[in-house]
Image 1 (cartoon, rainbow over the protein chains, first blue to last red):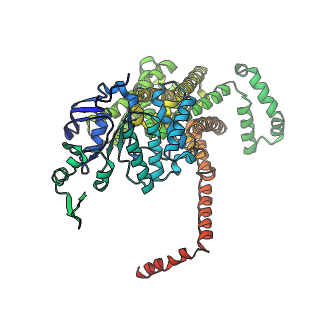
Image 2 (tube, chains in turn green, purple):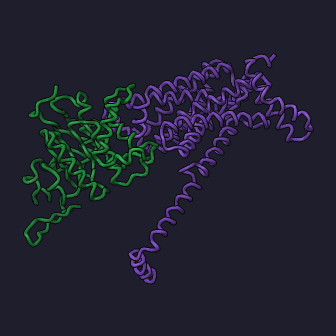
Image 3 (cartoon, each protein chain N blue to C red):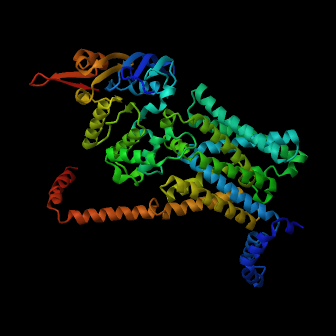
Length: 257
Length: 358
C-alpha cells in the first residue's frame, strides 16, 4: 500500500554522527514533506554528505531516528535512491553505460534474479530521458564529467524511487547537463517525488530548490527558500566565510567559501 | 606401475599428438641440452610419469581458481589482502604439522585457513583499535604472521620428522608433489566458485563496482564480502602446494590484471583471467619440470608476468602500442582539421606571445 501523500517523505529525529568521537553532525531534527526539491547548503566540513549518509544507514550514528514514508528505512529500501558523488566509483571499471544503468534495477531482483525485459525497458527509458541512449554500449571510462553524472542519474531513474538523495550532482558538469539535472529535479517534484540535494553553490540555490536546509554541524534553518535564504541565516551558517554584496538593483549577492 | 595411474585415454591422445615429435627427438643427440629439454617437454605433456597428470590438472585448477577470484580482488582494490592471507597461512601449516606430525591434507588446510582468517580479522581490528592506517596494518600482520611461520618451519626442519616431510614446498611450491586429493579439492572449489559467481553475478558485479549503492539497495554486502574472503582464503590455502605461500597472491593479481587489459567487459574479464591463470599454471609447472631446482611457484608467476607484459604491449585497445596509435591518429586528425581553418591560426600568435614572455 502506498503511503498517503500527507505522510512526510522523511523524518529525522535528533541525529548525531561522529568521526573519532568528534561530532560532525549534531542533533539534527527534520521533517520533509513529499513533493519537494530540497537543497542542503553549508560550508565545507559542515556535515552535508555525512548527514545523508547517516540517514541512508551508510554510517553508524551515535543516536538518531529515521523514518521514511512513516516507516522504517529497511521497509522502503526500493523507494529510497542514493546518487553518490561521481568520484566515489572507479570510472575505469569494465562495464558499459547500459550495464551501469541496469544496475538501478538490481535492488528489485533479489540475490539470484535476472533482469527481465521490463527491467531493460525501464533502463532504456531512463537513458533516453538523460540523453545518453547513443552511449549505451560505450565503456564508462569514455564518459566526460557531465556524461558520468547523466549515467548516475539514469541509474537513479531506473530505481523508480520516491525519495532521492543526490550528493553534489552539479560538480564538474557542463552547463547543458546542469540544466538537464534541474529540469529533472523539477519534473520529479511535479510527480510528487522528493529530492534532497547536497549543494555548495549559493548562487543557484534560489532558483533550483523549493526548500533549503542550512547546515553547519547543527541545523541552522530549514524551510522555504524565501524564508531561509536570508543574509542573517546564511552568515550564521557560513560564519566569517561569507561576503554579502548589493548590486545596483539592490539585489543581494552572496559569496560563500 | 606409476605409468598406469593416469587415465588411458589421456595417454593415448597425448601419445598420438606427440608421436612424430618423439621420434624426431629420439634421433637427436642425447648429450645436447636442447635435446634434453625437448625430451623432458615431451615426457611432461605426454604424461610419461603418473604424477604428471595430477601436476598438470592441479596447476591448471590453481591458475583458473586464483584467476577468477583475483578479478574481484583486483577490481575491489583488495589485491594486497590476498598477499596477507597467503603469508598468514604459513604458521597454520607449521602448527598443524606440529600437532599431527604428518603432512596430511586435512589438518594442514584447516590450520592454514584458520591463521589466514585470523590475519584478516587482525588487520580489521588493528585498523579500528590501533589507529593504524589499513596499509600499515596489512603490512604489519603479513610480516608478523609470516615471521611466525618461518620460525615454526625452521624448527620443524631441524627436527627429524620435518626434514623429510617436504614442508619447505609450501614456501615456493612444488607442483610435482600435488596429490590426487588436492586435485579433487581444487576441482571442487573451482566448481563451487563458478557456481556462486554465476548465481550471484548481478549482486557481485554491483558490489564490485559500487558497494555503497549496493548497500542502499539492501544487497547483503557485508555477508557477500566475508563469504568471498573466506573463499579466497580457502583457495589460497589449497593452492599452496603448487604455488607456495610467498607468491600465491601473484596468481590472484597478475592474470586478473592482464585480463583487464584485454577486455572492457566484466563478463569477458571473468572468462579471460581464469584462462590465463590456467595457462600460466601449466606452463609454470612445465618450466619447473624442465629445469631441476626451479620451484613451480616462481615459474608460474614468471609465465603470468610474461602474459601481463604481452597484454600491456599488444592489448587491442589498452595496450601501449594501441594507445600510441590512437594518440597519433588523434593528432593527425587535429592537424588535418586545423590546417585549412583560419580561426585556428588566429589563435597562434597568442601562444607565440606567451612563449616570448617566458
